Image 1 (tube, rainbow, N blue to C red):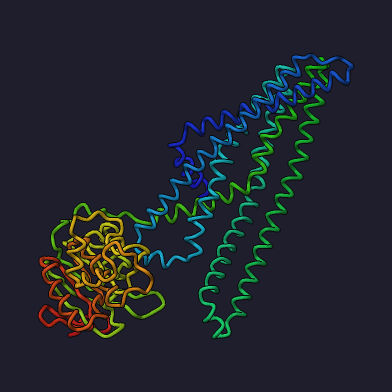
Image 2 (image 1 turned 135 degrees about the vertical axis):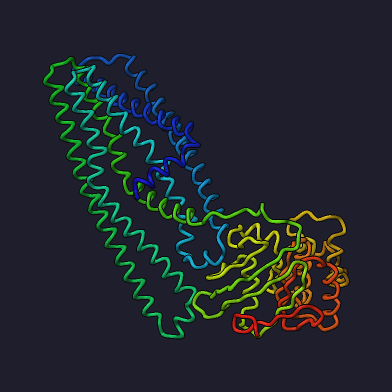
Length: 538
C-alpha cells in the first residue's frame, strides 16, 4: 500500500515537472558547491598548517562558491515549495469536489475528526513529500556519484568508490532498516491522535448529555488512555530515531576514517589530500538529510493514504446532461427505505408517483417522514434501499449539484443572509429585470418589502416575522425556475387569508411544473396523499 501511495503521489506531480527538475538541479548544484566549500576550506587550512601562504584565487573561489550555494539553496526551496503548494492546492480542490459529490448523509456519517484532518492537516502534511522527499532522494542518488568521481580524480579509484557506496548505504540502507519501525510507531501515534480528536469532539458536542448522565468520568478515562497511548507511540518512535542517529554517526565516522586512511596512504600532495578529505566531509550532508527526514515522509504517506481514500470513495456520478431540463419530470419513489442514523425515523417502503405537471399535497403526523422526502429529493441523503427515479434515471446516479438545479426544495428552516432584500432573493444570481417584483407579488410580500424600504433595504436579524421569512424564502426558490418543487411547510406561519392568496398565486406561477407541497394544512382542490409511519396511508 505504501508503495502504491508513493507511486500515486509521483503521478500526481507530473504536471509540475519543470519546477521539480529545477529544484532537483538546484539541490545537486548546491550540494556540489557545499562540497567545494569544504574542499577549499580544507586546502586553506592545509596551507596554513604547512606554513604556505594561500593563493588569492582560493579565497575568491571560496566566496564565489558560497554565493552559488546560497543562490541554489534559495532556488531549490522556491521551486520545491512551488511544486508542493501547487499540488496541495490541487488536492484541496479535488477533496472538496469529492465531498461535494457525496450526499450530506455520507459526509455526516463520517466523523468530523476524519473530515477536518484530511481537509487541513493531512493536506499540509503531504507538503513534506513534495518539498522534502522527492528532491532529496534524487540528490542522495546523484551526489555520492559526483563526490566519488571527484575523489577518484584527486586520489584514486578505490577511495572514491568506497565513499560513493558508503554514502548510498548511509542514505538508503540505514534509512530502510529503521524507517519501518519509525513508520509503524508514527502511524500508531497518528491513529490514536485521530481517535483522541474524535473523543474530544464528541465530548464537546455532547457535554450537557455527559454531565446529565454522569458519564464525564468515562469520557475523561478514554481521553487519558488515548494520551498515554500517544506517549508510548512517541517514545517508541524517538527510541528508533535515537538508534538511527547513533548508528548513522558511527557509520559516518567509520566512512570518513576509512576514506581518510586510504587518502593518506596514497601519499598525494597536500592540496589534493586536503581537497579529497573536504569533499568527503561535505558529501555527508546529502545522506544525512535524507536519513533524518524519515518521519516527515511517514506522516506524508499516511496522510496521502487517507486523502486518496476519501477522494476515491466519492464515486462516479452523472452531471445531469441526460436530463430533459425545462420539462416537468415524473418522480417515482420505488419501495424507498431510509432511516436516519441513531434513530428509527424515516421511510419504510414508500411507493409514490409524482406525475409531470401535477400539484400534490402531502400530509401526515409529525415524525411520519414528510420532510425526509424533500431531503431525499434534494440528495441531502440517499435511500438505504429502493430508489428514486426521475424521468427513468435513478437519482443517486446524478450529482447533487445537477439535481438541485432541476429540483428545488424550499424548507421552512432556510436561512437569510446579511444583506439587502434583493441580495437575499438573488443570492448572487443574475435575474431578469422585474423578476424580483414579480415573485414578491406571487408570495404576497410586495407591500411588506415596501414598508421595509424596498428591495435595497438592509435586513436586520429578527426584523421579519415567521410568515414574512417563509414567503421571502419561497420567493427565492421561485427565482430558480426549476422543473420540480418541493414546498416543505413553507406556509405554516401564514394566516388563513394570506395562505389562500399565496396558494392561489402559486397555482399560476408553478403551472406545468411538478410540485409536492408538504403541509399540515391540506388543500382539498388538488391531489392529496397522506403519510403514516414512513409509508403511504392506505
